[in-house]
Image (cartoon, rainbow, N blue to C red; front, side, top):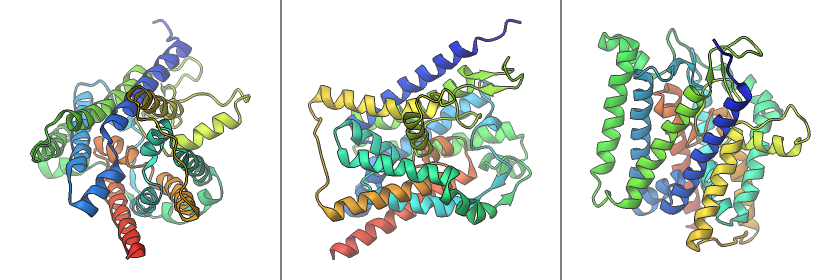
Length: 368
């Protein structure tokens, strides 16, 4: 059997990841897809339209991931989110910090990149601060604190920690069958709930929900199918090319912010190479910029004062620390992780939303 051309395959994976994230940036900028914005609309105006966009995206991602797994295209046990332990405290603390931070920073990690592409200099500062805080929580001072505290609290599981594995015993079916049934039930319910919204079924709403969800599925295919090598001729081990974790990855934007800064700062170091996460960061910015410039909506925007700067700096720190602690952001856990039915992802998303609501209540209290 002919050995795979690792360099060529890696280039294909990175190109695919860039194109997917470029489209993500285009869609998010055009439709105003944003987790923080969706939560803000619900809390401040009682408008669920953008939350239904998010729900539709999550439902489509669940169904698409389940289809890839059921067809044997990818192995769900080899994703970044599949683990034999449930770090519930890390998910709660990290998710809560990230949710609070995204409100202070005027958007989550993905929205920060979208806003950079549209000319927002505040978001550029947030990105740099978030990346530094994320790197510190991966390998630095806050990493030591994280590992010594919240990461020590977890539930050890017999099966991979996703809700379908837990449901398999209850339903009396195989893990694969349970995964498909649970994905159809949860994903289908989210799709039905989103489409049932009054006047929801309009062009931009459908583009946001179906488009973003489909891009998450495409990212899983690129990483888990195109980038999978059963035996890397250099290591003689299986590999997922172009990933930082060495496992199958999809869209996520907090740890990749750290890796992007690291790649830029140590560019001449040949050990620092482009990865799926890094090119995804550049892709979202490029896609948003392309749409903003083409539509005439590109505008330079800076800080409005000291308090505005302080909020965004603190928000960036909280997102960096929280996103790494929770193993993902509103996209990394909220769409990519949830699509795998990871129990940790569901916990992190709940904490993220609670943290966001708490931040809105705090802001209202400050204004009142």
